[in-house]
Every structure is written in structure tokens, then in C-alpha cells.
Image (tube, rainbow, N blue to C red; front, side, top):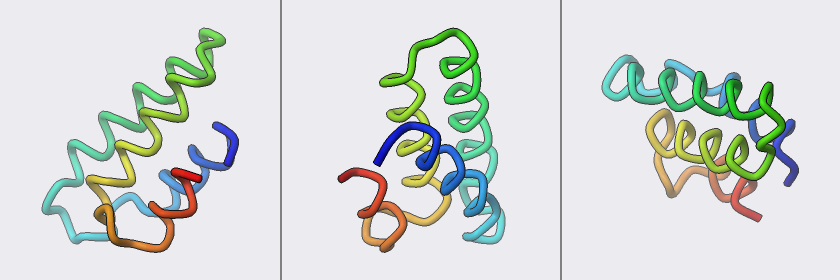
Amino acid sequence: MDYEKAIILARKNLGAMEGKMDSSARLCLYDALQCRDNGKYELAKKWAIRSLSYSVGIFHPDYKKAIK
């Protein structure tokens, strides 16, 4: 998956765990967007995936899609 799709997936899943790790997920998504804006696309994808790990967890299908 490319960085744009990973960011979209991370944004879609914000708040999925009802606030447990929402602030961490939002901070990681913010970092992903900053990296994207600065042309650091691989880092943007990594931050988006980290956001997903906080918002839905590493066993969720969306997380598994993003890491491929």
C-alpha cells in the first residue's frame, strides 16, 4: 500500500477504540501528514501505520492491509 492510502486508512480509523489511544493515533497521523508535506513519503507511511496501530490495533484487517 502506498503512503496516500495508508494516510486515508489512518484518518478513517481515528476514534475507533473510543478514546483509549486516540491522542497517540492523532499525533502519529499529524506526523504522517507533516512527512508527506515535506516529501518524506516512506516516513509518512510509517507514521500512518503507527497511527493505525494505536487506533485499531495490530490485529485489525485495516492495519494488516496497510503493512503490505
